[in-house]
Image (cartoon, rainbow, N blue to C red; front, top):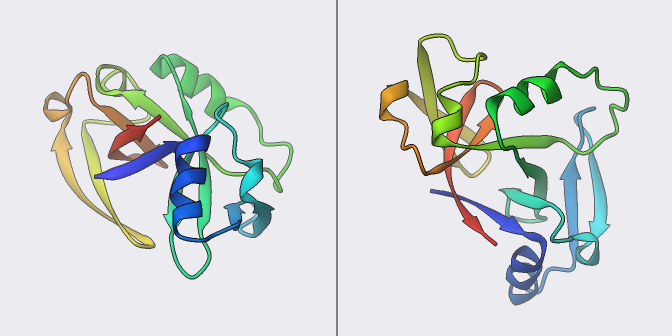
Length: 143
């Protein structure tokens, strides 16, 4: 299962690995280097790449599928902005209109996704899922 961390949990994890610098993925397909002190509990983070330098994607927990659709419908004004993955509870994934019939439940392996189709009714209502384009990853929140 994929893990999404709070700022403090990720900072602790990285310090245990003796890592002080991280990179964030940006919408313009580049990365921005930061010190781990920039990690805050106001955000959640997905560790997209662990070695040799950690690459992070920022995550946000949305309360409803409607909030996700409103967020996605806003035009992106800054392509140097840090990429944001949406997180929803299973009961809200079912309501998200971006999915037509079948969902792809993905698994994350290092730097790539591998998915398999599942039915909406197979989504666990109280589990958390991270949306990556129109695939979903079941996640574990480390807050």
